[in-house]
Image (cartoon, one colour):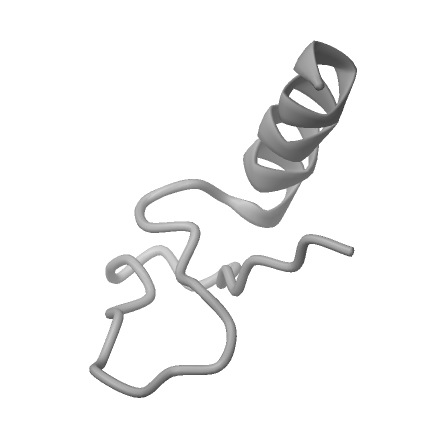
Length: 44
């Protein structure tokens, strides 16, 4: 299962830190991250 962290806050992206268990979705909103994950799953 693939999981990304994202935020609905408009003030900035989720920052990745060393040792994070879940990767950051960066500047993607939760909806954008979900769509990107669906595309990645379709490619594999």
